[in-house]
Length: 74
Length: 179
Image (cartoon, rainbow over all chains, first blue to last red):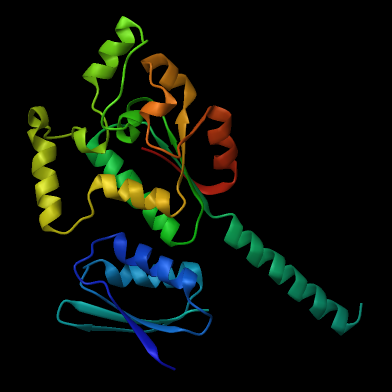
């Protein structure tokens, strides 16, 4: 399954989840996205967003200031 | 009832519960304050809820109306007192004062500069984005009347309504906030 990378570095709350929501609206079920953010609140935010919207969070990794989340559109 | 009937019934109920859970988590807000910092918080929460896939309604009343005004307005045809109030109040999100550390208008400039450095979206664009993504703004008819504000003085695509419009939206929401 090809992954689409969404680079949200430099964006502050609430822009990463807002942009993600807009992208997911247009995406097809089963599409996989890799979201990169350096917003310090991104980890709890993306976890909550996935829980609330029902899109599964496959992985969450940190390296330096960057947080990478892999999410499948339900 | 046979086992088959029961499992059919259970899946039916599951579907209905799921539908309720999705639909009933809307957010309704009252924006009473026209303070830059509080309006900022209100629009961040509104945008967050929109991102979560919720319907968001913001009932804007009293000082909150300052935040959704156009930057300039023609006050012709209004009473002396109305003109005075309109002249004294800020026009639009770029002109609001902060609730603390306003320092006669220098405070907001300072905060805007600091927020810009941290790449925080400016207030006017948070408002535009929220409306573009479906935020419903209802301006309070009564407070508009009191202060002589007309619909054309406010940003485009804003509805005008009363307390019943706010309540009807609040009854459909799981979260109602007053800012």
